[in-house]
Amino acid sequence: MTATFHAPPGGAAKRGLIEVSGFSLSYETLDGAMPAVEDTDLVVRPGEFVSIIGPSGCGKSTLLNAVAGFLKPTAGRVTVDGEPVKGPGADRGMVFQQYSLFPWKTVRENVEFGLKMKGISADERTRSARTLLGLAGLSQFEDHYPDRLSGGMKQRVGIVRALATGPRVLLLDEPFGALDAQTRQIMQQILTNLWQRLEISVLFVTHDIDEAIFLSDRIYVMTARPGAIKAEVDVALPRPRDAGLALLPEFLALRAELAALIREESLKAMGGELNADALQGLAINLHGASIGDVI
Amino acid sequence: MKHSTALASVAVASDRFIRETGEPARAGSVTLRPARPAPAPAQPAGGSRWTRWLRLNRGLIRAGVLGLLSIAAFIALWHVLTENRLNIYVRFMNVPSPTQVLASAEQAFSDGRFLNHILISCRRILLGFSLATVIAVPLGLLMGRYLLLRELVFPVSEVLRPIPAIAWVPMSIMLWPTNEESIVFITFLGSLFPILINTLHGMATVDEVLVRAARCLGAREAATFREVYFPAALPQIFTGLTVGMGVAWVSLIAAEMISGQFGIGYFTWESYSLVQYSDIALGMICIGVLGLASSLAIRAVGSLITPWATRR
Image 1 (spheres, rainbow over the protein chains, first blue to last red):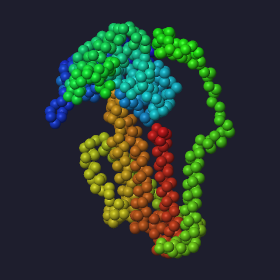
Image 2: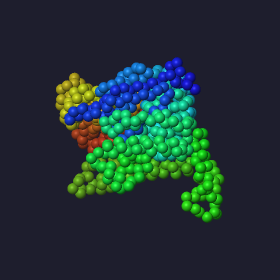
Image 3: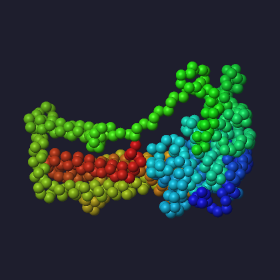
Image 4: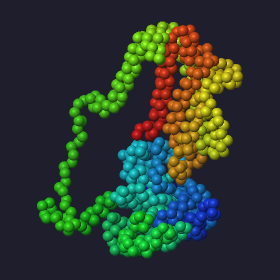
């Protein structure tokens, strides 16, 4: 299967080590430097599926964008397989929260784009794209323009497009945030499937705790702004995982733990606007959602 | 595959809640309805292909019929006003009637001179408009991409833009050695600014996430320009071309009326001087039809080249 993708020789599983160390990033404002992320360390081992969760605005997307090469750290290092990240490139595939398919290209042409940039011949491109589209169950839509597709299909094409060049790592920035709950679950299954087949490292940003547990080997929990790593959680749940996972006591325990960690940070993030005691007085059961989600 | 097993395991977990139809309901129970037979394959809903085509294109046919009716009504009104030589503050005594215009059209098309006027005007449009496109589209794309160029060129273009083409006529006659060149120049100027502004606007509205997606897929500057910025701006560029074509005709006719010796604008003005009143109307109708036809042609090319933008 991997032979049809344009991966350099040497075995896919040995590639894709993401290392972020001493990472800080601040934005310049009139009042001086505003730190978005402070002194953060993070590792994704080859073939590992790692998620970052945290309250909104905590800088998890900032971190991901730095790995993608769109943002330069103010301090610290970001490396992939030991090479420092200098800018965006096809060795790091990225899937965005917004649908980012080229509207003027058909589904297949979208998937072929990265290979075209690599100068691969049209025939070979088409073959690779068809294989991947088949894996994602999109074969019969290859000649459609993106505006004919549902949100879930668009995001599947987005994932397949990012994988087509045989990247070392796949970066996803809340890719399923705009989808309904059922579609999201199916998409998670599909992503897990692709990840296992292609033996690729994944760094996944989300604010959905269930999603993070369902998908990940490991989860980093970030603090409120300025973001830093608050906790690192191993998800020692067996694979393959299915929707029944949500009924396991281990899942529920892990979820409660993560929810508590994030709740603390969400409250901090809301700061002056609302205090925790006031909420407790209302006896609101948050069911694992962050306060930001509920209000 | 995986998903269906997942569903199955959930169903097993809630087995005890499932009841058969007819059993009394309990709190939290699930009643499964018997599966319905698969729907029959879609039947052609009566009538032949032709009648179905008619039904599906009702809107189009309606618009066409109403359009023809409104033009017919306009001509009828024109006929009534002119045949009766009405003088209702607005004076229709000297206005040619439709039949007179038809007669002078037959006359005009019988020798090559009138056709020559039309051809000369079309050639001027083609030259001026093509030049404007060749200059304004790349300039707009580059200005949209490179801030320095935009900052340098935009102020000049903003000052020149409000000057109507007709105000350029004296200057143009001084600038260019021949009359022909100065008319083409005015046509060019007329279409230049709408095309430039729309191209710029198209560049400004390119979705940044598409640019980032392209970068992530290994596209460098030139490829990003070719594969993302250009196609993303294309629908807006075609809007600019359509508007530019309209302004090109306006400018051309103004220039021809003032400084021409040929062309449909010259023909119209000359008819007035020669008291050939029905030729005035003939010239005007020709200008209208040519303007409409060229705008439609651009729109047609636009929807051919940007199928994704027009097919929604």
